[in-house]
Length: 249
Image (cartoon, rainbow, N blue to C red; front, top):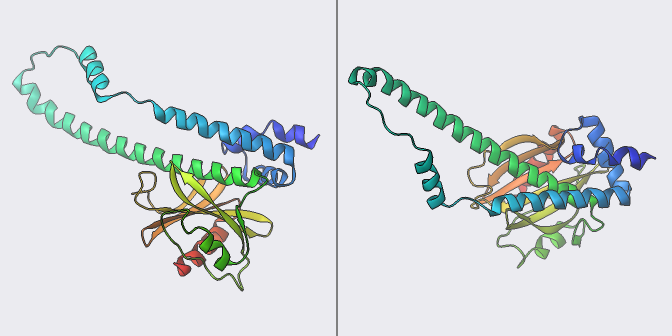
């Protein structure tokens, strides 16, 4: 009966449309229910496949040029006096529109990145094997990535902290390989993603805290790497784990 109640809310959960308390309850249910975990994982994979297909087809510059020519209107004579008044206003409007368009595109790109990371986090929680290297020892987890990703990174010493390292796996963001580490805090799993900060998906992405699909996140760059911490815990806990990772770097 409980599963039937949650099944109707999985899509809203994956799209970040549930209230925080309800999202946290469903996240806890997924971790303990194999059927709902498998269903959530299947839906995440469908979402990622649709997103990838949407990026695969884009109009060529030649097609864009033909469309512009087909909808172009013939020029009309404009009196010189009107130009004096209108041109500055038009230029100002173009600047405002250009800034708004750029800001909108950057915001959309940022949201896409964090949504994809949230999907990866959910997929890991729903998977029967969330990590490929299982260990609480950073000296075991870090060497495991050698030869599997094109960079190296450091991990913090967690003694005396409330966080526990569970292991890691190789992951991909926009077809770029990176490290996906899983930490635990009070029975909550937290994902830490590490990528090179020179790929299109992460370069120029603003650092700082974020919120996507009911998850708190924090991101920063360090030594040419881009770090993302994602989890259904408080922003303060996310920040504390981020602080530990920065100190290791």
